[in-house]
Length: 147
Image (cartoon, rainbow, N blue to C red):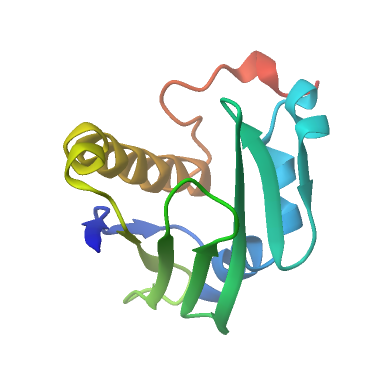
């Protein structure tokens, strides 16, 4: 397994608030553009979509309230585990947040995807920090949101 860790960052939300947003897979549908929602199905424990012709699914395999969520592949091109850590920061209304990905990548996939996956995880963390501070994440077009 290849372990890829995102940067750690402080998110301006309490651990329980952040945890609850990620604990229900249906919440992820809210982040999709309207035209993509028909291609994705979700329930409390799992989400499925087709990405570039490949079926991809993710399911929650462990919930440790307000501190950790563990996700696993559920019909993806490779096996993986994704961990979200919600650690209390010095301020009770903030969370020290990090994402860790353990993926079963062969040498070629690791070479091609390793840096891109780290970059993607860091971008998610940066976006979460920006949104928690009331800023638009870098690279997000505000017109994609309904008025």
